[in-house]
Image (cartoon, rainbow, N blue to C red; front, side):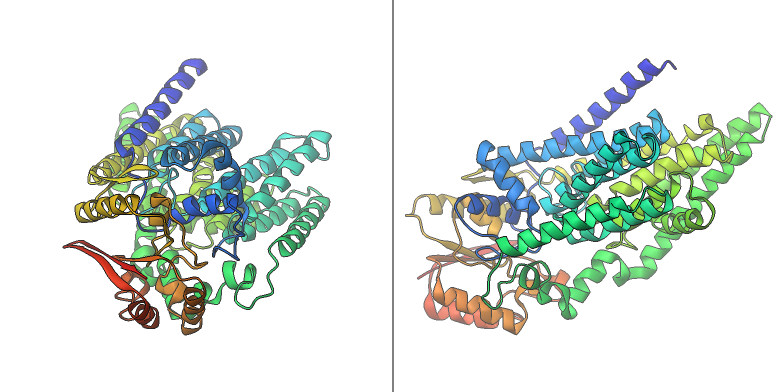
Length: 560
């Protein structure tokens, strides 16, 4: 097939996948309670003069909210404005994935990588906030954008530009800048970036100056942040009490939560799934190798048919294919370190492994992995479309058979998303715009709540637990720096005491207590088996203004 025609076909398929994903999920990306509202609420407060970490608690480094504040100062803070931000960042990520994969493994690999992202991650529906339009954390998605920019520039400096040339130094400068930006979005990236940079510089002999530049820039950034966010009050330090708060990183509640994130909580099932995916993938590689060594046309056709059957098994086995690469990346990293430091294999294996340190047994486009898995896509396509053919395992033409698997995975996930998003058909009308919920009771009661708020004089509002999304949607403000009130944040007695002090110093005019499932943290209900003192203080200082109940949702409104 002529190159230009192939490019047109690839572009048409990618546009169709992205268009379908967007259309069938339109207006359904945002959960009205959980997570995302934090990043929708905080930028507006920054523009009003609030200081991050002091006036509003934040568990990530500061770049994402300040970047969003700069953008929304121009676009405004509506749901439509944030939708545009999400779409633009998604398109930039797709372009970066395409560019890196194309440079490393060719047009087909670039198409496969972009297709996986657009069909699976762009509007992912595996859990709340597992999409790039209204993600659970913009720190995660913007950080990944910068991480991919870092990886692309570092790849160009290492494998494209001539060593030590002005062009190579320029690419290194871009890589270091993007790497610093990524590391100031999320702690995972702050760990991954130096690991990738150090391994790449040493293995490919780029010169220690790059590491020195990065270290110097990072130290300067840390010094600036310490000056900008200084706060001598106990309990409000930007690192110790926010980003690395003990309640979020230590204790049984945090341990339980992060064991679910990493996959260690159910390691037997995750390991078994990874082994199945690895075995089926290895079987395809062997079949393609045998096919190359078979001269009989009938046998080659038969082996290709068997490959397609294995692909069907992989597509039907959930995310086993991706989990299998969670095992492969470790083996490939070791192999590259010992046997092959000349090819880009070490680069992509390091990039993949470093990005997924938080999810070692959950390497899949699922929940937290929907962002962290993107570098794994690059490793997959590089190995399947470039590395194995270059080692004579099978020919480049045979590698194109993998396209059938990627198309199957894309179609399967788009169909799954269509089913999940179709359940979000109940509108919620808020000051920021209209969104659709899957819980009819919640949509109906929140609609009533927002209507009542709009008819009353402005007063401050605090929502328990994890209701800052409601503040954002209503255009209200909370006087508290705390805003999540999930067990991992406030179950600790010392933290609860801090919240009580803030409530006494700056009592909100109105408090809303909403239904939020906290069983993922090992607790039953706010005010019952955690934060009982907070609930008691509210009963003593507030009176009941409204109590809307339905079988699947409840919202209690208290006023002073």
